[in-house]
Image (cartoon, rainbow, N blue to C red):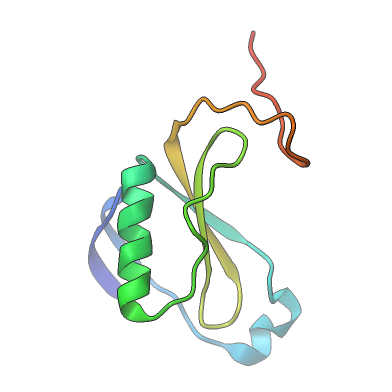
Length: 102
């Protein structure tokens, strides 16, 4: 378990347990996502993960906000999304939606 400041999350306690046997059935599944403030926080996370030698996606621009994806030691995907939106509408890209407006 580790306590401290996490970029975009503030002071938090995070506990990640490694259990390869139990995680086999969930490999490549993303059971948890965290929100950070903005793309700058995701870039800070990417730098931090890189320094630790943890493989991760680039900062991605999906439908609404920014996203960073990496796997925990058991192979479960962790998604970090930003609260801030990028405003890029990408209807020409397969799998990308449109923002719903009222």
